[in-house]
Length: 234
Image (cartoon, rainbow, N blue to C red; front, side, top):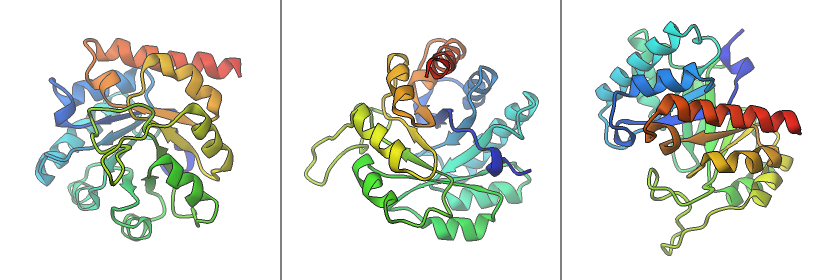
């Protein structure tokens, strides 16, 4: 069974070298060890070779934790990096793209049917998109931002320079109409988890809440436990 068939986006870490002041693999190990289920390597500053090195180290710590078959390791946008890493023998499970990035059909063609392809867009665009789109090539949607965030300064930014964040009601609507799982992020903090769970989305993604924490292991544990505890109350 491929990891795509049992993809779990309930607790999703997005991380790159610009988001942390310690080795990325240490934070990946802390998050996955505490129950994070998906890891995305995202960087606008790292070179392709640097990204491949990060993926190799991240894949290794996931393997050492015995979770290579259950925790997905993805790359933001860089289909070329995924292919090059795989050529080097690194287990990379797929790619995450935006609506203005490489088309999902192209990603699927090059990565194959066992790989994961995620797609993100502004929430209001996704709500319209999912009503008519063919989502057979996509495994999940990434939505947001919930709050304005320093880790992705263009998230929620409109063409006239204004910022639009989204309320829990919009995420609930998206979860209701989407035929595939939805993960929400953008400045998500521990206090947001109960309300996010209540919307019906399948997961949350964070950057700073773990990568920027004084104690990433504790931060990851608190987030995972908050989601589990509030899911049990539903």
